[in-house]
Length: 355
Image 1 (cartoon, rainbow, N blue to C red):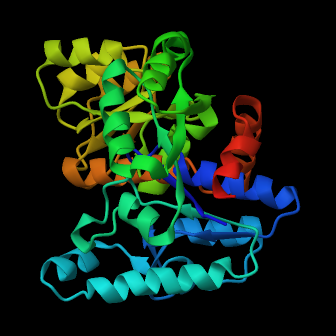
Image 2: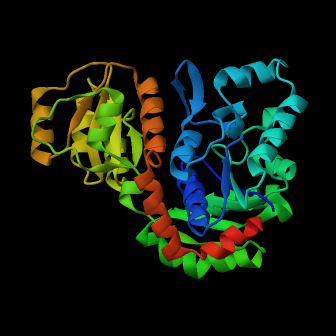
Image 3: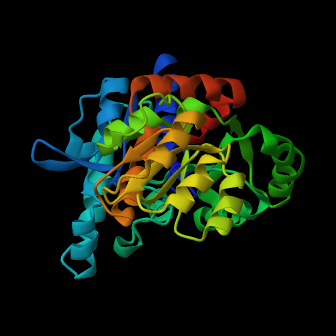
């Protein structure tokens, strides 16, 4: 048995949802399934320890008995990275810890799904990128990628080259209706000519690709300044309003399902954002309340205004973290991904990579 390593070209491709949905499908087929995420990157503090949320979710969904330190032997935190750069982490010992814990997890299992880090290159400072991990565990690889434009194939081909013969194939996730025809007619044949197998494409589904404005406000501890604007719209991405009004308006008009992050004193940017149909809310920083005119316009447009005390840079980092974690934070999300996989992909062929 070879483990199935689920990797990705970039962060926020739905990797955890796909990995756990595949593991759940195998379990439903009567197989004994293990899960491991050797490099914990989606970190939160719990009971005095910093741990990755994904193995916690895996334990719940797959009813696993393994301990967190077995499923996640390396906590790839900023502190760990700093210590590794200073030469205070033993590379060989880390690799041995990964293999020892994998062997314990794989014992008596019919299949093991291994989840990669945020993106396939993470871990290079300890020689444990996802391609390194695939070699270490003798794994076969399913590579996830988003697809917005043909230039995204540069990342896919670079990853395919890095994984070499261990790459089983590629799965595109979160593909919009506008891009499906191009993906089917041009991209998949192009990759086939490069000997890269594509298992399929999962359509973009709103509840898996973002969080609601209300959820965003709760996670950030933001004040909602608009009383009548609904907060059930979905936000999938953020735009930073730090340019002039004309340049901002041009960018905002092209945006989809976006929140604009800007200072509370930038009424020109706020007004421009409220006039763009793809902008779902304003996220104002620095604790500066906008003018009454801006709040009134937001009420009329039905677009909430959220206010936080933090600076713009910190708010961007926190908001992006909310978006990333929002994709896979409960069993219902994994169940929905399982349905999408069953409709779009030959699950048997994907899981056979680990046979």
